Structure formats: C-alpha cells, structure tokens
Image (tube, rainbow, N blue to C red):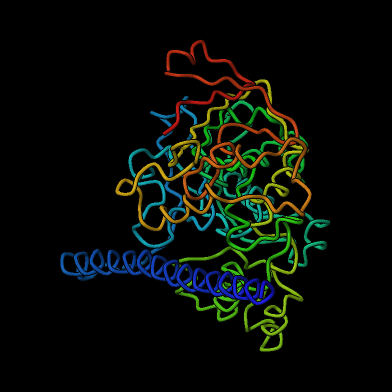
Length: 422
C-alpha cells in the first residue's frame, strides 16, 4: 500500500515538473516573440515615416562609430554600459534599447553588443577589442580547449582607441555584465592581450554594478543546470530547449535575422554553410559546438562557476566600485515570499517564488564552505540578492554598506560601496 502511494506521489511530482516545463517554455517563447515583434514593428514604423518624408533615402539598420566631439568632452571619460544575459547592444533589435535609451542622451555613453549567451571570458575579450579596435582574439590556448576559432569579429575602428591608463573608462555592468568588466580588468592587470603589453588595472576608473551576478544564482539550477557540478545540464529542462533553439538559429545562419539579433556564437562556426547537416546533428547530440564545453554563459552563472571565476579576480586599490542590489521578497512569519502580487510582473512573480523556495539538494555537497539556503532566499526573480552586493566567494572582498549618498563621501577606491536596495 505504502509502495503504491509512494509511486503515485512520484508520478504526481514528475507530472508537475513536466507541466511547469511546458508552461515556462511557452511563457518564455511568447515573451521573446513579444520583444522581437515589438522591435520589428517599431523599425517598420520608423522606416515608413522616413520613406514618406525622404523618398530617396536608403534605409539601413547598422551600428556606426560616430566621431566624438573631443573639443567639449576631451577631459570626460566615456561611460560603457555592459549588458547581461540575453542582452544586446546598440545596433541590435532595431530601435530598442537595453539601457532605456541612455546611449541616446550623451555621445560619451557606449553600449557594446557582446555575445548574449557566450561565456564571461569570451565577452571580456570582445569588450576589449570593441573599445580598442582590431580583430577579437580569444587566445590560442582557450580557443583550442573550447573548440572554436581563435579570432572573431573585426572592429576596423575602435569606439575608444585612445583607452589607456591616462584615458580610463567608467564601466556600468548589469547582471552578468558586471562580472564581464571584472574579468576584463583582471585581464588588463595580467597583460593578457597580445600586442598590448602596457595594459594594467588602472585602465578601469570605476565599475558600477546594477544587480551584478558576482556570486552566481540559484536560478540556473531551476532552469536546468546540475547542482552537483554547476557545469552540465539536466536531460530534460528549459535550458535544453533553449540549447536546441539556439543551435538551430545559428545553424540556419539567416543574415538579416542574425544582424537583428545574435547569440554570439559565430566563432564556433556552426553555420550550415560550414558544417552541413551532420554538423547540426553533432551539435544537437552535444558532441560539438558551444554547449559541448563550459564556454557559454550559464556555467559561469552557477554558484560553482562564479566561485571558479572569483578565485582569480581581484578588486584593485585605484578603482572605484559601486553596486546596487535588488530584492522582490519579504519575510512573513519567517518564510520568504514575493513582496507583492501586483507590484511584480507575473512572469517574475513565479520566478521570485521559485527562487525563494529553492533548497540545495541534501545529498549533494555544498557549493562552498559555509553555504546556507536561507542566505540565498532573497532575490529579484533572476539573481539572489546576496550575489549582487559584492564578491563574497571564495573570499569576501572589502565592502561598506551605505544608507544614503552622503555615506559615500569621501569616496574611497578599492572597496565595494553597496548602495541601498532597490
């Protein structure tokens, strides 16, 4: 009798998991289609208006390097906004802006288009060449280990070619973008760019993190990463569906579509023109392509992946560090729950609830010494609040929590100033 009941409970759990997967997949697909269709509709409307007003004008959507007015902004360093996972830079998705149009308000604001699903390492390399110019060099050793081309996109003209210690940059990173900047700064300190032997950490004047992914997120496990290692995916999960969709998208290699939105895996060369049908099969089976290694974004966003990254990243004494954390939870009778029903987007509400109730499997070793589930319950639906304040694992970096802006003065470099929760 008890055996039969146990089997019934297990079947119910499996059925609920499949139902959740189906609903989650449909919701994410609809949301993605909504974003894409909104961008297309906006561009068509803009193109139609321009066509009617200037019939002889050639309409083309592309990113251009606009010469900066050095006479007025010579002493003011640029501000580089770095997007997070599934993000996009200026020139992608038409007139849509990841950073709410910030790049349109000041010519010093730069929004690079980095791989939306590529690894933190690859994106840091891309960011360097976006600013300095030249062909992206991912490094020979890294490229061989991960099975992709050593060289990527060519920036014929850098967006800030004078970048050096005397012309440093303010960086603002959202989500995974904050970790990208930290990896880039470490690369600069390690002189990791061939042909640029004079780089150092002081090329980064400041880093401001907006809900930065410093210590990983339990969202990755809910979406399908294995909590045992933080590297591999569960056989059936949302990420597996995402993997299949991305591989087919890149394999089809439709020029106008990829110009509109690109996941960033061009250096893996999985286009049908290069690998054929059998190459597609090989990628789908997990034998080749970006998902056959750890060289994509999700392994970097697990707690274990963040620990691996943080183990060789430093906070430097001459750089100013700021972070803003977000939270959409509260405690009721000691239980962490979403802070509001009407104040949170329905999609995010479900994700906030899931993350607040997630528990690390008891039969799996903890991701780091001193891990506690309760520390990771507060979240905003995408990241855990504990991950956003400052680097904590494997070693906590110097930090100071401030209540208002006056507590920041005088500004002190080399420590993380954690601003009030948003």
